[in-house]
Length: 115
Image 1 (spheres, rainbow, N blue to C red):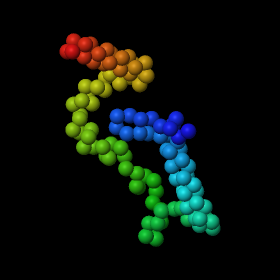
Image 2 (cartoon, helix red, strand yellow):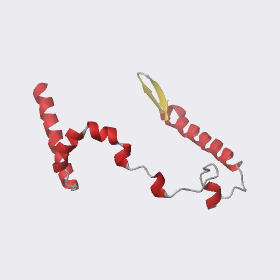
Image 3 (cartoon, rainbow, N blue to C red):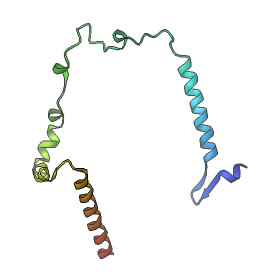
Image 4 (spheres, rainbow, N blue to C red):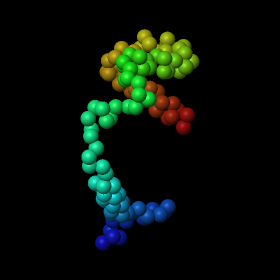
């Protein structure tokens, strides 16, 4: 019966039944580890809050990192590309799909020509 589930290729064999059994064993081991965990853990706000060395939790505005600051190096290095591409950004999914189809058609034509 196990032979009927085995796929033999030029590089070896692959048996889906063994993968299902291994996945089931991994789930059982994971469930055993989870079930032996601490049962009295309080999931209230105070127990899950980050420890900030005894300091009060800061406001979100004080610790929030804006994406413009976080990706400054990328946006600065690619500013020429962003200036070029910004007029084409309409937010309409149909426009993006049309551009995707156009690029795909160009690539396919180039592949046929250069073949």
